[in-house]
Length: 470
Image (cartoon, rainbow, N blue to C red; front, side):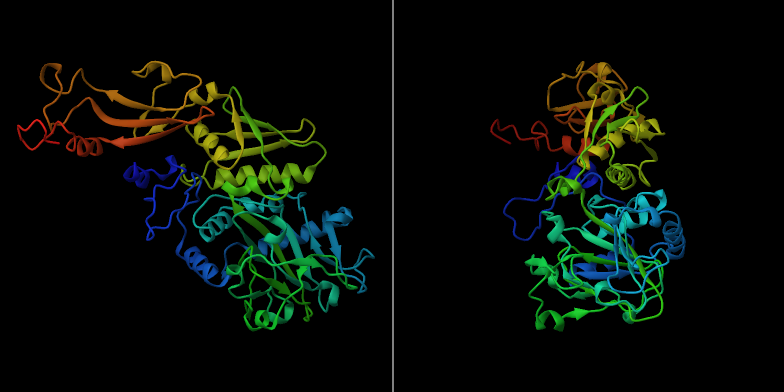
């Protein structure tokens, strides 16, 4: 099984490390781990593990994102509810007569920004930084701005993101630069190595400019000694930091803007153990006649509906069982309170079900799931009634051996083949593993692997006539 897991890691969700082996670190690989990380992502992940923060250069098209952000500011920001917009206090007024914008949460009105977390490049980077696991966002996309010459109300006090999320496995934040900026523009400062020292106590800043975030009230000289800056950033650069890294940002002292889009990710296998239900939308899908998947979403809560759609997209984009992710369309009918996932390729429908389950969602409709086509290698698995063991019990958890019969026997005259001889009965075989919810995971086994195993059979002794020989 351990050798099989190395060839087909998507079939197993548990570690197969030897118990008690101090030299082998055990982890739990997930089925929807993103594609293998690029060398650039690997370097970013190594720096993040060491320092608690890192910079990825030219990860996305920052100027295109900046154009989208400016369109958002023109079209939607004036109508945005005040609870999602934080503004500068006691400073110059903006064009709308209010204080200048510092922070915008729940960006849901423009799909290109609302579903930014599902960008394959960001998913690949976040996955690499979290050890190769599948990832999902914690919040909708946010926009942070430091207006030129801002006063004290525009600074961000020292804090740790996981104080809010309370994730059992802290995630990462991806801060995407939209402007050319340097240290004087108020780029984020990080306390190097603070992600290794646990979560610290936070309290509200009750000063005249406070109220934005809770802050660490014991920021010490030692923290200042290990404070580090990221240097110059170009549009499209991405600053990644660990959710336990202490960080803060001063005001912008330049004449230009300092804007960044932020997406927070956590490992998808812990997303349903967050401190607040706001961070963990669990959807209950039903399989439709055409293989589409539908789920109910909360009524009169657009931000929640958009967030649910983004988590689904992340699960399908990051699924490594299909090269390049699963091609899909996600639609939300706000009036009917329904989210629909359309999978164009029939052979990817079962993979989509597995991706959603691995991401923490629930899928109902076992019979339709079983009837979905599945291709193993170069042949298609027949439907359950055609298998040699008959039908599959409705309420059972187990393993079935699938095989393709090319003849009526392995040896001469239909007799079993001689020890070590190659049989033409099962040129390819597979294991079908059924989960408690009825979903199957199928693992192909090549003929050479079967032959190698058969030579270790007890009946293939070294020729000894000793009845006690192993």
